[in-house]
Image 1 (cartoon, rainbow, N blue to C red):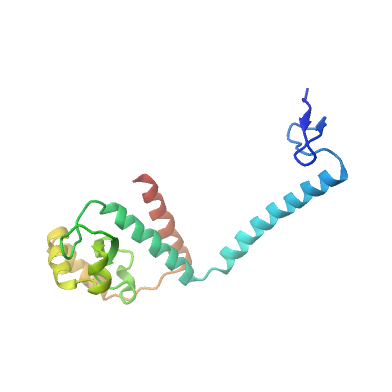
Image 2 (tube, one colour):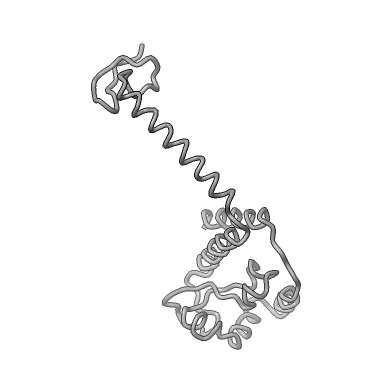
Length: 174
């Protein structure tokens, strides 16, 4: 037996037909219910339309943000790879520039924690970055990374969505 409920709109008590019914059968209450349902459906349609309109560049921007956040979390507590000082503001520094070397843009060996000063104001501070990168990953992995950086690479939407999902999953696991 279903108990009486209080209508979400008019606050009067009513006997619902099902346990999920939240509004009474008054015209105004039904009107409110329908407008709320329409609003929910519109939100769903709007989200779908937004994702349909997203370009590859939009997905790459999101992937870069998620990837950079993961690198900062991975290297949390470490010093800047270039100046070896504690980073006041942490950045994800790419050894090979992300805009010019697409094949290593999302390569973990290419990205390490950098301080804001080295990454932004010293354009990556690449000479000490290289020295410390070789110490960190070894000469062999550095050579592979440098060779891979010169390859041409184009991403598809599906590949970038996969990268986004992978690094979001990794962020949750940290």
